[in-house]
Figure (spheres, rainbow, N blue to C red):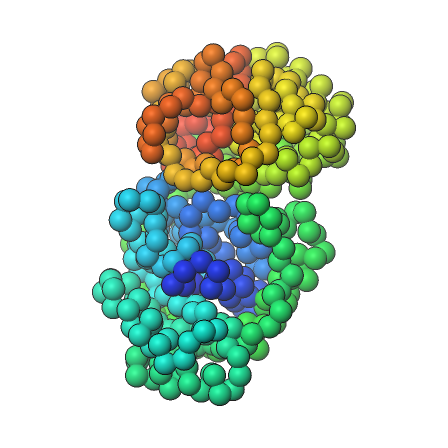
Length: 449
């Protein structure tokens, strides 16, 4: 049974203030000495970094498309074990999910799966009495979604606040917080969203502290905690990466990190470790060698396009990666990793493992995908079906090698990525918790070297 008190922070639309409120609540409750479990609906990698900074715990994703609805509660239980409170930041608008697939992967679906009360963050900057109609519509749209209260954002004055409160008195939903119009907390954005925590360091710490102070000043934490405690127990066992690996030495799996490679799900390292690997993080911007004894390499997503000159200038590491890949060692590369393995990125030499060039583009490629492995690789056996997500503003030419990594079935049919020697490289982000066999297969190939 999962009995962790919990709240889902949602909004009628994007840019209403969800991240500020959710991260601020995490920081404010953590400052009270509570163990706060941070979660994010959907495939986003960046917000969980701020959540982790606010709570001191790994930010974790709850994605009903990539992992399936049946894993949402078990993954939540895994992340929130032993915590006093869990805060779940939603994605987009409350009822927005995977395109054309109803409620799938929406904040509303996750709230229902967790049986968690929803706090609706409303941008009240251009309305007064109409806020009641808006809130009523969201609260009555799906009777299985329980909206427990409202936090009003961008409120202009005491009079504006009074008008909003009077209107919401008729709705029966309590106002749990009011945040005044104020200069944006320093969380700069660029082409894929907020700038990740790893790139901002001290500035990110200051931003999270400011969010916590703003929420503490404007929200009723006691009422929010009381609402969180109304969430009933969930009859679900926690997801676990536990596995009984073959006896023998623990192969070293090097995992790219640092400012250029910030996109990673916490469960991936847990699965690799459980499968018998020794996971060692390295920074391609700073380290000139791979970790000693590296038997396999995982290069996830991030922003290599921002750091292309620095990555290119680290010639010793590029040579080491190329030599490892050419030796046939298992290499799993997603999105940023794919670009790093290419011949060049925006004219800057990269590792040259793949005979392809990459460049920035004005076009955003974004969305969920259904995929099947085209051929055997250390990551996936041919025919393995997975769901994933693409999110990039770069173009790779050609987009697929002689032996592609994936056949994409939805939303369109195409092949994508590269499989050569031990390399599996693709734009597709995947969540291994849904298919733990890929981590186990990868480690077994590392062990066999």
